[in-house]
Image (cartoon, rainbow, N blue to C red; front, side):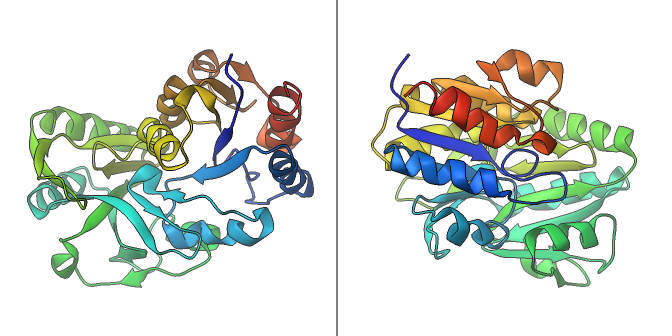
Length: 283
């Protein structure tokens, strides 16, 4: 197995506890990685502003992979690269979410837009990311430069049906744009449930497997030299691209089977245990 040069961690349910606490041991383990010459980076479905709170305690210098790779930013939130959905994708997906009677959120740049100030999970999300949404009567003025659309409901079966319909109806080619010098190419959208009550819709390159490849290129390491830590099904794609992978103890059996190792839960210092045992223990 290759020498690990970069550790990439999911945030919610992995780096932090269920109550979004970054523990003293988690901080110490990241600093121990730095002392061993191993870089550390984070990826999340959160917007960039919802990740910046980790920069100072963890002394992060690597790009933050927000929106599961939809937007890479520096620690000061300046843009490195982003993958956006074009307007002709946004409108029909919002209509489909409404058909399933889910609420919708839109993310553009570093901002978050909702139509109902205290709609389902809005208050919890605000508490998590530490900034309020912008409330708009409709999304007509937010259709361009969209990085992520979220459908939200506590009817978990409706969320699952919505995800399945998005994947079925958008399995053909639809036009997305990548804001790099490359030409626009016809691509598919990516849809996945980051939580049972959320379905996230992003550019197809905005997934955690692509985050592994993107950060490896940016930081001049090989994917085989990357270790990943996560807890949800959308973390499996980064497990598949990295040389070593660690599932959290509360993960589903499918997630655990996809990983090289399994640590304790997020409520039992699972992240710190993973770093100490499977990364620093190897070195």
